Image: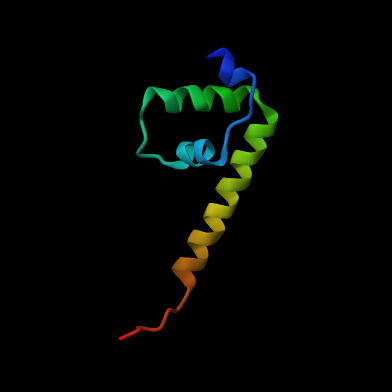
Length: 68
């Protein structure tokens, strides 16, 4: 892991990148490694995952009226 990665916390954009299961870039692996060793970033990622699941469930259950 790069020194720069160890000396800072991940941004929201970087955390969202980890949630993107289609992203297989090597940089994603470095982000994941950072989260494994950083309690603050791990908690932030868990929070984003939880929020994402809640939003997905809401959208699945929502009864949107057809606008047409």
